[in-house]
Length: 228
Image (cartoon, rainbow, N blue to C red; front, side, top):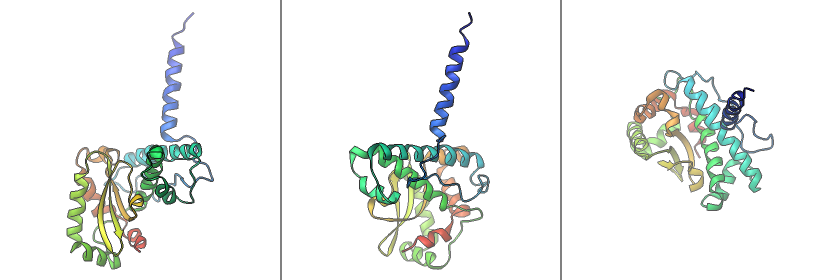
């Protein structure tokens, strides 16, 4: 009797199940406040500055997994909220719910990140946003230099944000899943500086990736609408 096929089938099933978990084969519950929204553009729309392969893995696998895990953990713990922001503020700093915070905050950060990008974006913003940047940083070029430098300084995985605190705009870096929402800051713009967001396209050149986003992909119209 040939039994060699049994381990092979088990291995195939295990790999399929592992990918299913990572990619989020089942969608988030329809009544969940954490959802995996489609990208607001085609996967290849940000090329050559962000490849379709990166978008497919980043949005379709990493982001999907955060959403799936967040929904499962929220259901298991009974934590409730009308918005992701409410949930983040409720459990921030509570070690008991650190795993929930990580998944919810990452789902939120990614959803926000996609909205901060657009094809043929970037460059110097206009209108009220430019006035606020110049008031807070002296000039747009000074902001661009500071934003890129601080993005490079993030050790390991994390995020860099342009945030609003009162009437001032500030640059804020966070580690891992942390988000300005947990620190009473209004996020206006972000760039994901986890390696999976840029390594396929830029390898270890994080600064080039951030500069490409600022110069070619930033959705400044979305950012201006987020101003308070």
